[in-house]
Image 1 (cartoon, rainbow, N blue to C red):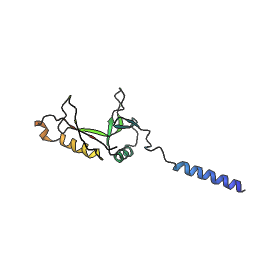
Image 2: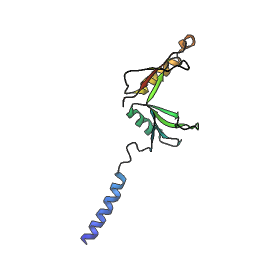
Image 3: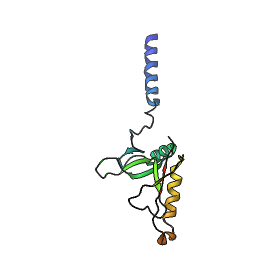
Image 4: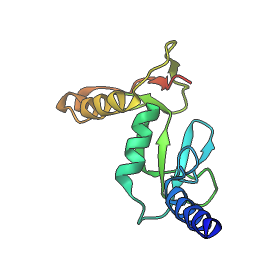
Length: 136
């Protein structure tokens, strides 16, 4: 009888703990490609969870980022670098490196995009841009 109770207890624990075992670190089967993390191309993915994870990493969430392949496919990505250009970047010129790393790229992206929408940009030229990278 004891053996039966122990077996039953083992089954209950296995079922209970099986539901509580944590998934891999990001839980999204993501792949790091350069300075971006590609989460998925699945349009049905839970975007709020992906945004939260990207925010935890200090990156900015891109709903149509590159997968790093030649095919033009939108993927949910967490970008870990960004070139801020204000009213627009000058083509063919490498952006200036920001010598300090940043911990929250999302704020920089939002500020840059807000500035890019300014009416003052009509009369402004292009800029070299500043490249920001999330601290590792």
